[in-house]
Amino acid sequence: MTAYIGLFALNAVIPSVIVVLFSGFVDRAIDCFKLNLSVSQVVLQLGLIAGCMLLSAVIVAVAKLVGIRVHNQLEMSVLSEINNRLENLSYSTLESEETQALLQRVGKEPVENFFNGINNSLKIISHLIEVVGFAAVIIGYSWYVGAAIVLIAIPVLRQAYKSGVYEYQVFEEAQENKRKIEYYESVLTSRPYSAERKLFSFSPFIAEKWSAEYNKYVELNEEGLKKISKNIGITGTATNLVPLLFGLFLLVPLSRGSISAGVFVSLLATSFALIKKITVELYWSISDFAQYHEFYADYVSFLNLSSDRPRPTDRPAASARRVVKNKRVSDFSVIEMRNVSFRYPGSDRKVLDNLNLKFEKGERYALVGENGSGKTTIVKLLLGLYDNYEGEILIDGVDLREICSVSGLFSVAFQDFHKYEIRLRDFLSFGRDRFDLDRALGVLDSLGIDSEILKQNPYLGRVDRSSLELSEGQWQKLLLARVLLDDSPFKILDEPTASIDPLQEARLYNYFDSIPGYFTCLLITHRLGAVINVKNILVLADGKIVEKGSHDELMKKGGRYAIMFNAQRRWYSEQEG
Image (cartoon, rainbow, N blue to C red; front, side, top):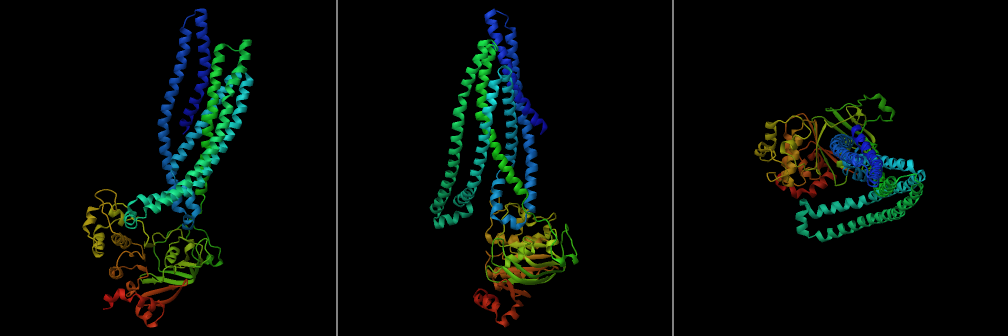
């Protein structure tokens, strides 16, 4: 980085040297023709000027090569820092609209923003060195002309910075429209929506939505550009008249013989170049600098977002418990939720209300309830994604808030999971260093998936022509296989089989329940026929467990579970028959 800065600084000094050499060249050329002197001095001056220009070109070429290395170093450090920060962000922070808007601004080509910001800062330094160098040369011959240049530069650069800040603010305001535009473009063009686009012919409707957001986006940007262009026009018109005034000012020392004709021509040409440097190159560099400064402020805000780092609870009872901060938990005997109440950030509705639950290692559980009753919320709390709940979640008597990580404790299959288009083995061994091929082959066979594809190990999705394209149900079976192959002691299935028919789903869960191994399993579903053989069925309603027991016990009670099951009975006539 030091060499990179040095190259910019050295290249910035050369124009001032050329100004002095050019004035000497003009004077010697005039003397040569007037006094019929040798042209050797003229050729020497010209050679020095050419040498400076060649040196400048070499410096620019070397700076580009050094710049590539600087860019690569930035790419490694910035992307690593962003990834580490994202990994440590608390789930509630990551889900907030403010964080998503911030990520939209920070996450768009952050390396390029940093690299361009560095280049821009070096350009400003370079331009300032040139301006100061030019001004110093001019002051050496006419101090009041140099002073006038400085007085002109200050308000122009100040206006440039204000324009840059304003432009970034316009960009920030337009990002919400930009996100909607990108979403509508995805709906109109991407493959997952193609079937419904054809079936429902909704393209004109979405195109109209896209057009409305795009027009808003354009209006915001045009409004900003008009204001910036107006400022540039006023500033540029005024400052372009300045070199003419400089020429008039320089006529005075020229007429008195204080400066030579060569100096006059060189200074007059320099004044034109200097005004261009101030009103165009330096103006835009300062404007861009203001934008990068705003970006960096956003980046610092991103780094300061709330993290998942463990913190001590303020309840007095916590001091009596075993504290395991900065440790990871990968096994357990009992997990207990005591008097847990929870509402999502920004909401007044309690999703869970004084909930009490206990999970023992080796047992099988089923959590059932209507949509929106809080089943998935319980999973999120167990995983430590939220810690702003009331009550306690204890793992072998230790408060979950006091534990650094439970990633080795749970293996989860969510209904809304991501379809990673990677090789099959990588999908099945996600996050694990070891992969047991024989075991994986057996699991795939048991789930009704042709195990031969594992030996081929294709890419999943539509990565290339040889990729394995899967139906929704096949994706969900692979997700179940991944959970089964994971050695975590607590396996959670949160309605991951929504695209599989009820009878096949029940068979899959029965197989899952029959697998030998001392692990705990929590099955979450609204299809009650899948939980008939589960010993511990938990019925969730109004944020509480209102019933629990086996299928037969709950059917005899004739309560909420029995009512729901009877409503779904026609789905499972084959099982009961």
